[in-house]
Length: 318
Image 1 (cartoon, rainbow, N blue to C red):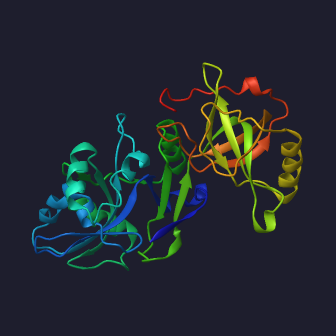
Image 2 (cartoon, rainbow, N blue to C red):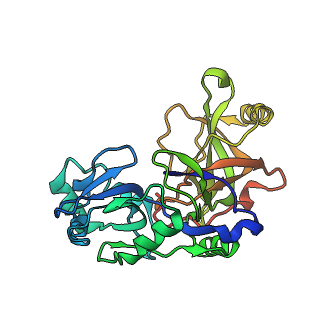
Image 3 (tube, rainbow, N blue to C red):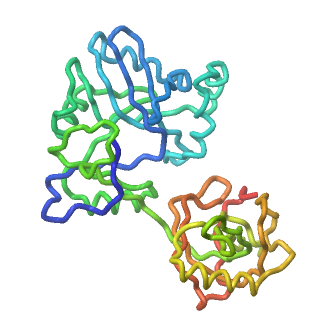
């Protein structure tokens, strides 16, 4: 069951919803047949059990009671927050068990459980509130797995708390909803916390197809403390057709043969421009190297000079 992007439920409906922290990891369904074995499947349906050997002891947690659980595999940073870039070093190892075991020692994962689809009997038509109560009654807390609580009501406060703690966002789940496998349902609403910052345009990539002759993406950077323009990523969404056409004219007028970024990013087919255009972008988080994740264009900032858009980039952004 998948969540639909949206907003908080109306205040008058707040008490009919539960709120869970949105996790930045790999979604998994956990199959526990009750015979001491365990199977993990990714959202794609691929079996990935061998990729996460530290989760194997979970197979013993419920004894002979068969269960199917829904959750998210996370890798956490030094601050205890989910770090998808860290997790990527663990993903894709389902067919390399020896390497998976070595990586488990270096980058251990944690499984967050948030739903139960079967517990001896199927629970798909059971209301979320009752499924959640059944899940919490299992007390599944271990060295590499846990069942974080959900808050009923108080959605605005829950969302504000995720923002204050730098978390990815919130998932709102209707208390009376059943579980709809494979469906992106309005009974689950996801709200992603996004941040906005000013960036300097240093290049662009030509568009293709209907965007031929127009920018398909702009390459943006931010000034670091030492004055260098550090590349922070490519932005390819967020414009109207008119805005993209306007931007194309500005980019052509600012063209140059020299890359303004230091160091020069490895971006094939890049066209460079003088770093004088400032824009504002929205993004979710940064990678450990300082790149923006899921950036989208908000607006040009003609009111700002390029030297005004310095950023506190990570020291290892190279």
